Amino acid sequence: MRGLLEQDESVSPRHDSVRTAARQRDFIRERLGVVYEMEKAREVAAAPIREAVQTKDNPADLINVALEKLVKARMELPCYSTLDEMVSAIRTEVNEDFVAAIVSRMDEVEQARLLGLLRVPAGGRSRFDELKRPAKAPTVSHLREHLAHLDRLEALGTTVTWLQGVPPGKVERSAGQTKVLDAAEMSKVGVVKRCALLASARDQLVTMLCKRMGSITKKTKEDLKKIRERHRASPSG
Image 1 (spheres, rainbow, N blue to C red):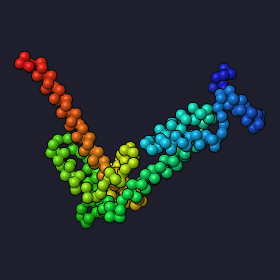
Image 2: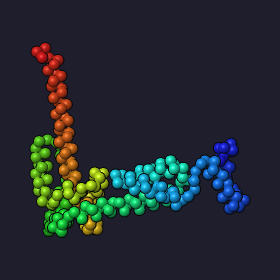
Image 3: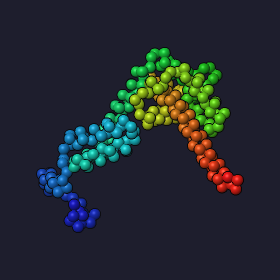
Image 4: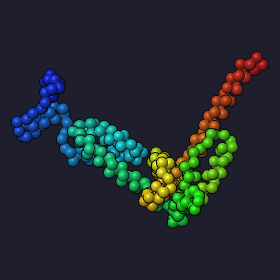
């Protein structure tokens, strides 16, 4: 309004009455072509948030998705705290559904195996550290070691079945949470979520191996290309 009336920023909006302020806001909405319906705005925002949270997890990204939809629908924007609370509630609900789905595919024996990783023997360390062990340089010997490591963990169960339908980004985020927690801290997490986090960490070890194999394949192709180029450039080539 200051801009349209060519006023500087020192000019503050003041109203003689609440009725006057409400009428002026209606004039502004009409001028801008936006609709003020907070309940409808929440409905418009909730749908894209629920869709985006299937693959995204950053609250800022989810709020931006909602804002884009609201602007397109010519709705007056809710305050930031409203959108933040909506994102938090929907994000929690969807993530809990994924966690419940993962654990529902495990039997009691498989759950017990996973939870057993957190057991700390007297004078020793828990097997939980095995899930957090970083991959070494992608050499042949290290890859063999990593494969043997995966074989030892294979008895835990079939993560492919457990994580079916869960977006990779969600699995990666859950695995990331396990990296910053020790066995004692993990034991404080609810049993259902604890099993899901451990399953995600196990899956990330396989993903890590695939990435390592991919980097080796890429480097091999690059080396082969250089050899061919040198061969063509040589006089005998």
